[in-house]
Length: 280
Image (cartoon, rainbow, N blue to C red; front, top):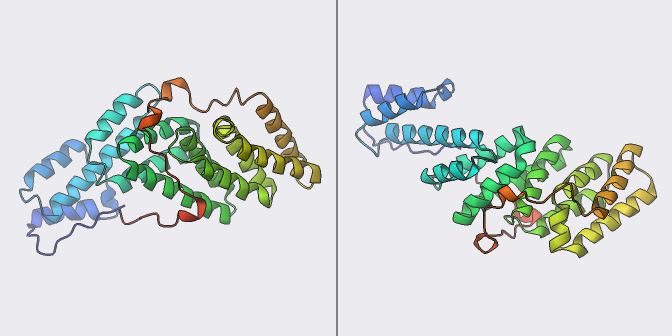
């Protein structure tokens, strides 16, 4: 997510050019302490110059990464407040990439990242939409490549965005249909993991839709073509549903941070997600 801000007419001294080279070279993702970045920024008087823009961009990137890597259930309100002070409209591409990477690296914190997205989305719906779009594209690519690990982590994130009312339940039902209509061991396993994450929410908002998915799973079970292990998983998820998904809360109380009326729900369908806006 590099913003191209080079203006050929921007006058630039040798020293500033060295600074820009340091920041833009491959290694010059080299770590620069925030204090040094601030000094470098202060030395450049022309705010329109490429050097200044580049340093401002790097500072924003480091700041966003720092906040995303620190966020947890206890500090989410504070972190979000700090994050909203940053220029996240300009850095929305960075922000989305940072959150998606963090969630993929720590899927057990998915509910926290989804809560963070839900707060940002209630203030800047276009950022929520961009993140959701990128996530769905990532899921579709992984599905085509039979990359089960990425399918599992990205669909888990989508499930929690449905729980947080950032994504519409139609998207969840479309994903589930895609996974179970031509069932394989892997696709059914991903579907079951996904159902556990947002089954409670789906039961509440679309009992008919989730009923149809369980009907399909029942047929898959009767056909008996899948691996014994996966058939057992289907039986387990029927039991989970019978118990009302009680061990799979859609949102824990401490992460219900946005009033329903303040939330903007994106009606994004599977085949609508095509342009990830990488240029941002």
